Amino acid sequence: MKIFPAIDLKDGKCVRLAKGAYDKVTTYSDDPIMVAEEWISQGSSYLHIIDLDGARDGAMVNFNKISEIRSKFPDIYIQVGGGIRSIESINKYLNIGINKVIIGTKILSNPDFLFDLNNEIKSKIIVDLAIKNNKLTTDGWHNATSYKIKDFIRILEKHQIAEIVLTDVNKDGMLNGINLDMIEEIISFTKIPLIASGGVSCSRDIVKLMAIKDKGLSGIIIGKALYENKIKISDILSLEGL
Image 1 (cartoon, rainbow, N blue to C red):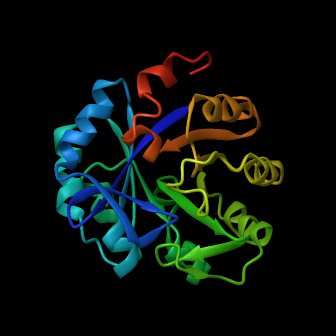
Image 2: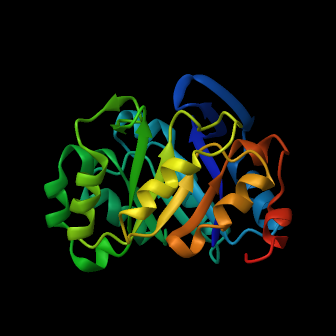
């Protein structure tokens, strides 16, 4: 099970949003490298970095800051999302050593984009399925799509997408627990490994997710619970099975 501390970048700073709302921002640090160093010092081997400005604007706004983090911690597994909407932007991240890139809006708005990707690039792609009120969302989680979730996952399976990040937008940044029912439902109808995101508030949530890891859960993203000291990475890693 991969445990991903979340580092969300806005204006070069480390922040958290509530339910993806850009007007509900809490800034935790002006130095994302220091934040990454803290999570790594607690034992993390993984980082989940999102360019929030990029997700909103459709561009790689915080690329230089992300590149700095990659250079500073060359042995850490890093996945990056936000504003990645072309083959050029995918390659730009892969060329600096990012392990996997997360794409949502581009694929949801144009699934045929997947035909443009060779198998090597597809193996480095994670598709972001951000669900709000039972709708898949795009553009920084602000716009709902008309896709049925199961139908869209079938498209991803056909293209042999290697992994999905599954986010309950209404849970994200709220510290009120995970939507286990949604996670279990989606795991039940796909063999694509899922990374769960949104709502982790305490070690009990981690234990609940660990219980379904053999069903297809490959990772957990944790954000606000870490920043608010509700849970420590070292405590998570000490749980049986991680």
